Amino acid sequence: MRKIASFSVNHDKIVEGIYVSRIDGDITTYDMRMRKPNMGDYIDNITLHSLEHMFATYVRNSEIGENVIYFGPMGCQTGFYLLTRDISNEKVLEVVKKVLSKIINHTGEIFGNTREECGNYRNLNLECAQLESKRYLDVLNSKEVTFKYE
Image (cartoon, rainbow, N blue to C red; front, side):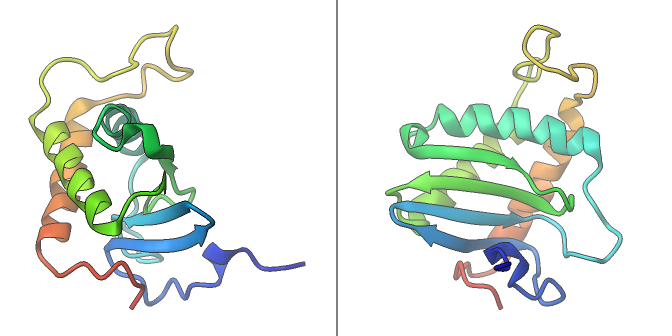
């Protein structure tokens, strides 16, 4: 059986950042790596879930919203995948930073926080999403982004 693309990257060499994981026609998969893999420092479930609600809503309502295919967490709890269609890497980075800033500055409730809207609506915490967004935005602002795995 063929190995899938995400298993072909040496996870011991991945550091926090944003990378192009793969390109399939006009769809680009971004690896939004928030934690270094296999180091024991994983994103807890409430933070993953909360950040998913906030980021997905903001990015789908952004200037690239119509070109967002998917946003969701990695099972290994070290980040998220963002799939877009026909958007430049630079534009994606710009929007990712804007979305993270919006989450950091968000007041009010988490989007989709009711029983009718979410299958685990009690497992949400805005402060967790804000802290993780701040942490990741600091990473993205601290270095040159090449979109290539090191």
